[in-house]
Amino acid sequence: MKKILLIEDNPEVRENTSEILSLANYNVVVAENGKIGVELAQKEKPDLIICDIMMPELDGYGVLHILSKNEQTANIPFIFLTAKTEKTDIRKGMNLGADDYLTKPFDDTDLLNAIEARLRKSAMLQKQYDVTAEGLDTFIRDARQVLNISELGKDKKVKVYKKKAEVFSEGDLPLNIFFIKSGNVKTFKSHPDGKELIINLYTANDFFGFEPVLENENYRESAVAMQDSELIAIPRHDFMLMIQSHPDVSKSFINLLCKKVAEREHQLLNLAYNSVRQRTAEALLRSEALKDAKSIIAISREDLAKMVGTASESVIRVLSDFKDEGLIEVEGGKIRIVQRPKLEKVVRWNVAR
Image 1 (tube, one colour):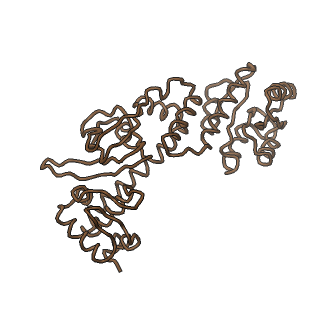
Image 2 (spheres, one colour):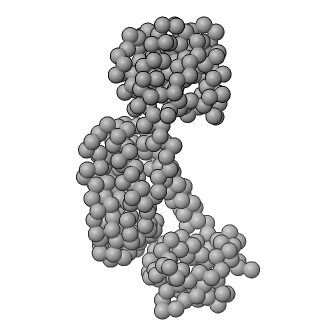
Image 3 (cartoon, one colour):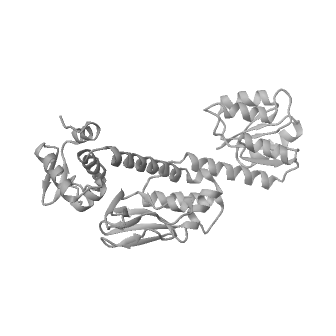
């Protein structure tokens, strides 16, 4: 049973609202002023707070301000219940972090619908989603309920790409973002002289291709399947709807975007200042995401060279050195990392001792 804290100084409104909530099977805790309301919020840790604005001791704005500064109460959904309808009052409440704003007199159904909507959003925000195809389905299903959009995710499709098949090309208009159900994908940039630089490697349960959608630009790189792969294509309009309609719904996407941006900045810095030996060690560590159950990395020397940003011959010489130093094993063109800590040390110091 969800617990709701009702902070209301008017006895009649407090009693009537409490009765409505109790009949709707909520556990109701009441406070007759803002000061008592803050104390009860910190003690009871309710699932949602309904608070009047104009109250003695401490008004609703003060209650929200105090609770938003406390880590234990900052994320509790907060609904203002008031007779004030001026736009400036509504804006002030929302700027302070209120989730909703209901005016008196209110309809019982409107109150209960507002509560249910806020509890659903709060539950979604706290829920941990597995980064798998099944977790993605659950995420979209929950987002569909929170946003009240039944068609959300209906156009999501699983597409099969054969090895070396193009997913998208530099300059294309992004119509989807992609989630890898199985397989591996590389993204790369092409130089006018025909050379390529691999930007990222993606494997199962990775998202990719969302940056140009967020930036409203065409693809600045190309993507190709490195082996037979199953990709889930999420239409651009669905992704943007989740981003724009309720930011909390897309929190995992935003965190992932920040991570990839940081990785790219780190890679560009290393290309500028690190030696070929250091860059090859880092490329091997990044390629570990492609390893199979036997920890074998199946990646061509050409693709490694494209990650390092140098000629294949240079990478082959460095790999030979790493093999002689006991950092890796090479058999039939396939690689197994046997001394990961030492490879990490190579990246930092250009030595392996």
